[in-house]
Image (cartoon, rainbow, N blue to C red; front, top):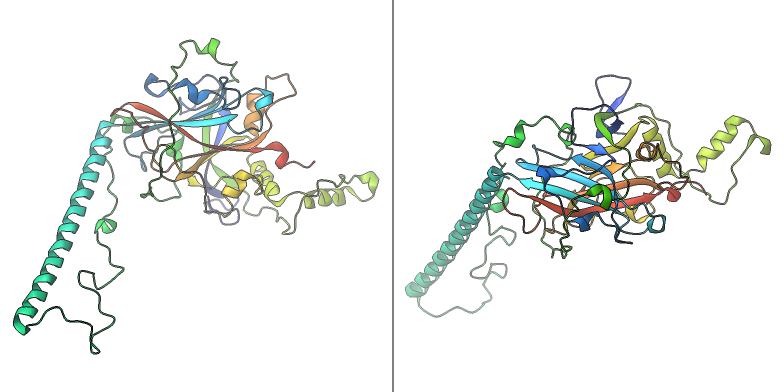
Length: 420
């Protein structure tokens, strides 16, 4: 996502359009008949994941669905069917503890995409073998030239003399120490085939997004984490799962902003011990408003102002972008310390980098808890989900089958953004 002050301009001078796709809850059906807020989950190809993925890591009880999203990105992952899920534990005792909110990704790679990937890997292997063969041939030629010189002029291997070039490369080493031994880096990434039945589906939520990041590149391999034991999904979800939140369809549109947002003072800080100013304490309503705004945290002020321009949004989507954070001081905020620099944990399935993909914002709580009578509702300010940059298939998944991968989810809790 571009910075707040540099989002790309739209055709209408009255607003600025960004690359962020906003999701809105709707009781009426939308173009995307898969994505939903709340309700019971449904599965890609009716192949359910391990029940362990939907269990709270604190109490080990089943969790409640917050979001399921159609994440198909045919321009980036041709032949991949993708679905994203976020679950949350309803138990008050588990709140604010790691693992009380979880997310995972479903991926099914078509036969044509698998074939194209295997061909790409075979081409890379052939190119590497050809490069090695060429290097060995060059080494052999250099040795022949050295032997020829010895035969013509006599003598063994000469020792270093005063007239020798001290900067000459040793025998067998390329003259350029920075030259690559392989031509792989010069080979452009090859796109997989899109001749698959998935390409004929209607446009989904994620397909509408304008991707701001380049296609994924190779990442250093790190050891994968151990997979959780497979637990069969219960046949009767209504008895095995907690009561669901109300179910909503999701509509999508690009974020539009006022091109001249109010400037936020650079010295804005939070004083948690300061009492809220009131007219009775002296000063006009204008002074009270200015004093209150100056006491807000700059990141939270930006968070609140940005959401206020499209107050009905329940989620923000931008694969490879940067989430809108309510604070930079917690563990989640520090991962996105600099715009464009992300320090998310690597994929536990394949070791590749993860990128930001989607986040839930407070309006989602308003919709999900619209029918709740309890005062002890959800307390998060935003839930951020990062996914594998390569959209890897789950280990052990057979060709063409659906696999589920546990993904990174970060939560910024309400009290970190609110004044005490």
